[in-house]
Image 1: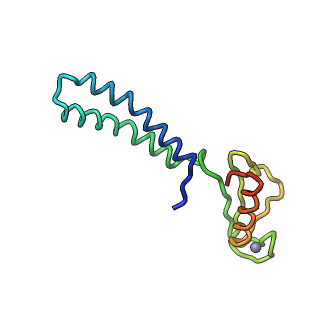
Image 2: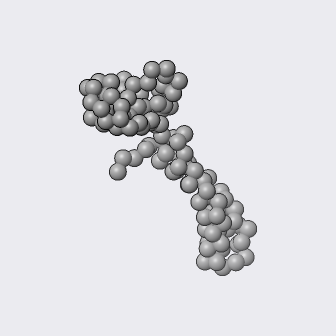
Image 3: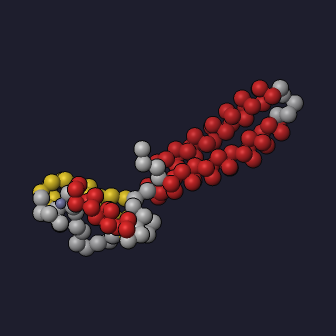
Amino acid sequence: MKVNYKRYFFYLCRWQLSTPLLAGVLIWLSTYDKWTATIIANLIGGLIFFWVDRFIFRTNFLSAQWEVKENIKCSDCGKTTRGYRLTKTSNYDKSEDKTPKFRCEECSEKKTKFLREQGIKV
Ligand SMILES: [Zn+2]
């Protein structure tokens, strides 16, 4: 599995956010026995962080955006097939490109490798 390290970093930060919340709830419930307090604290944490985690794992903000189109002519090899085009990453933006170039899967992988060598975060 390919790990998106930016997403992973946000996820680890999210865990740090849960620390003061759970500590606060445990202090608030300090008169309860430890098991009951922990169960309630985790329930409250789950109710909140389910939505935060869902956002972290679903948002396109943290990943590269691709455009996929059927029956294109690959701009590198000329083959007519499904085409791919990188439109946007954190340091690359071709979303307003007037003459977008699509590539077949094989040529797209070569181009992606080339962009990575140029420092583009794909
Ligand atoms: Zn091609």
